[in-house]
Length: 52
Image (cartoon, rainbow, N blue to C red; front, side, top):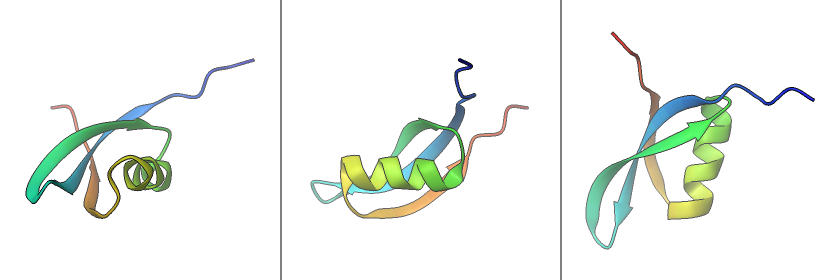
């Protein structure tokens, strides 16, 4: 069985009244949003990290 390829995303979340950008490893943007919401609650934004 092949393991899914994970990509790095950054989620902007509010933790204890402070806005933070946290890393999220996921297969795609939708799953990154789903994981961040499950872990942190409300998520302001999720974006892919692009390597230069």
